[in-house]
Length: 72
Image (cartoon, rainbow, N blue to C red):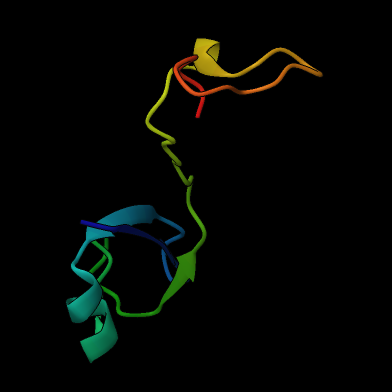
């Protein structure tokens, strides 16, 4: 489930909110957990991308990825 990052413009607290993409599309109205204000701005948080392989699976610079080597 995606995590959305917010910053309260009233008390300056930052917080996260987990919501499905459907919930987000329907329109979230997040409230600051610190002061209860709805004056919040959405922020871009950290993004994690997984390729499914360990970093050691990548070919060395200039190397080729061949079937069976674990990098394809």
